[in-house]
Length: 355
Length: 282
Image (cartoon, rainbow over all chains, first blue to last red; front, side, top):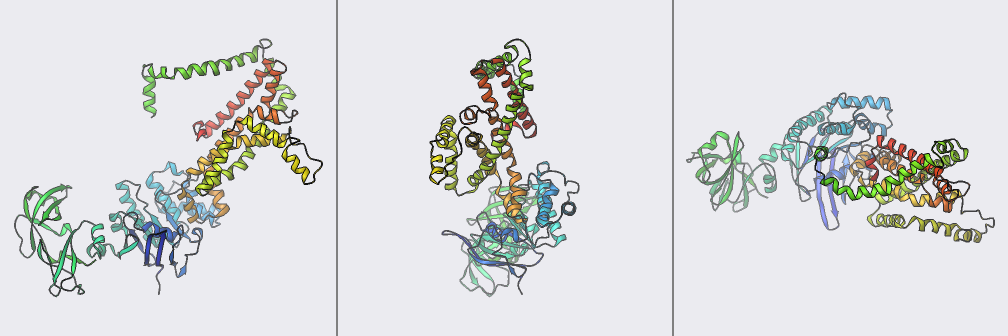
C-alpha cells in the first residue's frame, strides 16, 4: 500500500553540485506537511520537482499511485501559491480565480460563480471585481490561495507564501490557511524557513539540510526528540552538550566539564563509551540561587539577561560550556549579570542525540 | 516625492531655477520661437487670415495626403509590430548569446544614420541593384519596379522604426515576473492559451508604447518617403517640404505643419489619459 504522494529517491544535481541527495518521502491524503530548512537546503528544489518546474536527475514522484515525473506542469493538476502570489495584474480577483477553470473549459458564467464561492471561502466575499493592485498583501495572498484551490487540485503547494507579510498578518494567515486546508481536506506541502510557522501549522515537518532529509516527524516529536544535532539546533533554542556514555544500562553519560548526567528515553541502542550529544531545552532548566534536590545541579556564571516581558533569556557559562536558560519574567529578578547561580534539570529533560 | 517637489516650488529660492536656465534659454531660442513663428506665418502669409487653414482642411489634395499619411503610419506601425514582437520575444527569452546577437543587430541598425539606411535601400532596390539582378537571374524578365513605390518607402520606414517598437516591447517582456508564467502553467495554461490570456496582456503596455511612438514618428517622416516613395503618394511632411521648397508658400506649409502638430498632440493626449505619457520611454 503506497501513500498518496510518494517521492522515491529523488536526486538533483547541477553539474558537480548535488542539490538533492536521495530524498524519499510519503505523504498521506489530506496531510499538511511542511518542508523546513535553511535556504539552499533543497526544500524549494524538491517542491519545484513536485510541481514539474524542475526535472529530477533521478527518482520518481507519484500521486495517487500514478507517476507524474514525465508530466508537464500544466498536466499535473497541482495548485501552487508562490512567494509573491504571482497574481495576474491584468485580471480582477475573480478572473484570477476563474483562470484555472477557464483553462479547463468551464464557461465564464459558471466559472465566475465558482470563483466567487471560493473567494468567500477564503474570506474575500465581494472583492471579486478588484484588481490585485487594489488589494492588500493579505488579500492578495487569499486570492492566490483561492486560485490554487478552485480547480480541486490533487496537491496544494505553498512556497513560502507568508514571507512578505508582517507578523500579525502572518499569524492570522497561518490560522486561515490551516482552516481552509482542513475544510477542503487537500493534501498540502508548505515550504518555509520559519520554524514557528512549521510548528503551528503542520501535521508533519520534514527538516531539510544540504539536500537531504534530516528528520521527518510530527512537530512535537521534532521538538522533543530531534534525531540529529542539526535538527535540535535548528528547531527551537537548545543547549547541546557533548558527552560520552558511561553506563548505558543506568542511562548515564559524562561531560568532562559538567560531570555525570542521567538522561531520559528508552533508547537501548547506546553502548558504553559511545560519543553522544545531550540536548537540554532552555525552558527545561531551572534557575536558582542554591542547589535544588533531586535534580542535576550545575554552577553557571551569568553573562547576559535578555528580557522579553513575560519571560527572559539568561545566557551564561557552566564550566566554560555556553548555556541558555529560559525563565519566567518574575524569576529573573533573583539574578544579575555577572553573578554566579545554580541551574538544574531533571533526567527527563535530557535527550540523547547520537548523530 | 510629491511633497518634496511642492516644497521646492513653494520656496522663493531662485537658484534651482537658475540651473535650468541654459536649457530653458536653448529651448526658447531653438524651439519655442520658431514654433511661434510658424504659427504666426500660418495665419499671416500671404495676409492676415485663416485662408491657409481653410484650404488645408477642405482641399481634396490635402485631405488625400493627410489620409494617406495616416494609413501609411498605421500600416507601418502594424508591420513594425509584426516584425518587432517575435524579435523582441527572441531577445527576451533566448539564451544570453543569441539574445545579445539580436540585440546587437537591432541597436547597430538603430545607431546607423537613417539617411544612410535610406540610401542603402535605394542601392538595394534600384533598377541596377542586387535584388533586381537576382530576379533576372532566376528568369523573371519583367521585373517589377521596386524603388520609388509605396513598397520601398514602407519597407524602409519599417526598417528604420522597428527598433523603437522592439526596444519598447523588449523592455516590458524582460520585466515579466517568471513566476507569473509558471503560475499560469501550474493552473493548466499551455501554448496558445497561455500566450493569449497571460503573456500577450502582460506585454500589452509595450505594444501600446511602441505603437504610439512608431505611429507618431511616422506621421512626420520626411526623408525616407521623399527619397524612396512614389511622388504620387506623398506623405504630409513631404508635401510641407514641397510647399516651402518649390512654391515658397510658407503660409500653407506652416498651416499644414500646425494641423499635423495638433493631431499629434491629440493622439499623445489620448495616450497620456489612458496609459500615462511618462511610461512612453520605458
